[in-house]
Length: 278
Image 1 (spheres, rainbow, N blue to C red):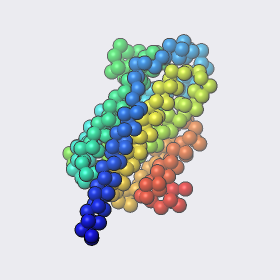
Image 2 (cartoon, helix red, strand yellow):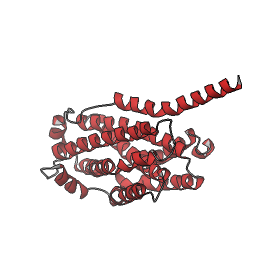
Image 3 (spheres, one colour):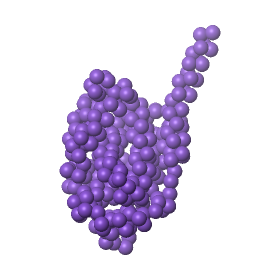
Image 4 (cartoon, rainbow, N blue to C red):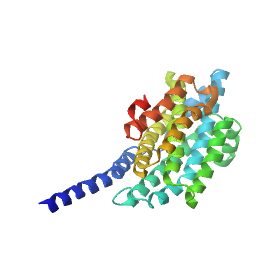
C-alpha cells in the first residue's frame, strides 16, 4: 500500500511539473496573430494632424519599442539551452519549447513596431535595419542602455555559463518585460484610448497580451530555478529605479504601478512574503 501511494504521489508530482510548460504553450497557441494584417491606413492619415506634443510623446514610446523588441528577439536564444541544464520539468525540452515560442512572439512584435515606424511615424529607411537606426535617435538613453548594453551583456554571460538562469530571468522577464514593457505599453494604450490611432492601439494590445504569458512563464521558471533572497531583494530595488527609464513620456502613476506589479507577482508566486508585495 505504501509503495503504491508513493508511486501515485510521484506520478501526480511529475504530472504537475510537466503541466505548467504545456499550459503556457497552449496560451501561446491561442494568441497567434499576423502583424501584416493590422490596418494602419487610418493611423497614417491621422498622424500628421495630432498635436505636436502628443506626436513627440508617442514617437519616443513607439521608437523605444522598435529598439527594445528587436533586442529581446535577438537575445532570448540562450535561455532555452540554460533551461535544459536544470531540472524544471519532467521533460526540460518542454520548457525550452516555450522559450522558442516566446522568441517567435518577439519577432512578430518587432515586425509590427517596424511597420508602425515606417507607415505611421514615417521614419526614414527602406529596410527594417535602416528604420531601426532612425528610431534609435528618438529613444530615451536609459532605454537604449537597458536593451542595447545590459541585455546583450547578460545574454552573453548566460550563454557562456557565467551567470545562472535566475539572473537572466530577473533581467529579461521581471525587469524588462515586467516593468519597462509594462509601463510603456500601458502609457501607449492609455494615450490612444480615444481611438486616434486604432491600428497602433490594436497592435500594442496584441503585444501586451503576448507579454502577459511571457511574464507568467518567466515567473514560473524563476520559481523553479530557486533564486536566492539576495537576488529577489535586488530585483525589487531595481524595479523601482528602472520604471523611470522612459522618462516623462510615461506618467509617474503608471511607472509606480508597474514597479508595484513586480512585487505582487513575486508575492503571488510565493517568492517573497505577500505583505512585502503590498
